[in-house]
Length: 499
Image 1: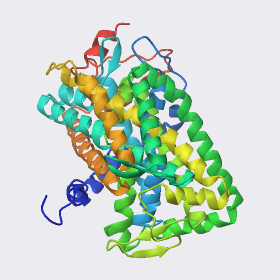
Image 2 (image 1 turned 30 degrees about the vertical axis):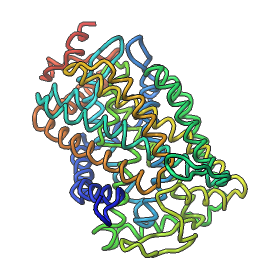
Image 3 (image 1 turned 120 degrees about the vertical axis):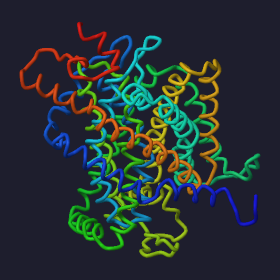
């Protein structure tokens, strides 16, 4: 490798290309377009979203709407909600939180579109439902080459690049909570026993679950996700309540720094959208995989449920983290040149780690913060790893229809476990850089695809209009007839329409 050229510098260069301002404004623009076209479905049908959470039931081939929500949330609610929010503030300032809210609100409409498409073009294979962007790109766009590119990019992203972000946060949080302890010499250099042990535990438990299949993942996440999210939010609400007099200052700070020239031209907008997409995944193309796996009467139903999951992720969990950090002033802001613009805590703290969040809870609840966040982060990150595996597995299954390679799934599982272990012991900046490349690649491919599909037939919009018409008519049971709506190649629903 040439002098001065490191792995980190290579990753940063690629990351800057993928996450150019064009992608940031593509995410915001797509969300705005779909919000207008759906007449702001995220507001109009909010009550219906909540009702549908507990409406559907699982079947032999599909999981319930709530289970699909849990699987999806297990991907959305993760390190991005703790370390990601901290990084948004650390690099973009408090104003970045406002732009996280914006991309969540607009992205909720995008989440409806991509998840409804996932349902419309899903398939039943080997006794279970599968679907996602690769499926609707092939069937609705008729472009197999594009579908293959998305599938390969997603396998690389969710199987190799993104898992390291989650495990890295677990390792760093464990070290901060329980100390570095003794060190040991390994092939990867000198590591603390705590971090090495955390890596081994995560890999071992992960291996046990992913070899059990999607049903085991769904049953695990439907129990863990609500519990961990509720516990985390209750703690955050308690901290806000104990410091209620500080809340007006925090909200004023967020809004005041969201519209400065520096915020709009870079800073807050860039980091708010970047970390917002990483956290809530709207438009990224990961949500449709879980949406397609659910058993519903009408595709629009799961689209609405997935739209609601964006609210849970960003407006609830991310906001809870942001308020804790800002109320307790447990953050720094780093400028583009690496200089500290705001210095409230030690300058040596890397904003890409969960340290700001751990310090915030520790300041509010002495003796509790560091271990509490480490435990919460373990569950948040671990369930995200399960979602990543399921997404990667779905795309491997898609490609296997064209390229027969029997050991593919076994190799995927081993590769993901290796990525998790490697990520846990690497630096946070490298782990995040690799993860952001994965998110960016999927977002580019998926958002361009769903925008093209709007001009090629508007299947998600037709499904929404059909669902609302049946809802207005007060039908006892919803039905979906793609042929009558002019939607082609939705084979699963074409066969089912007579049921």
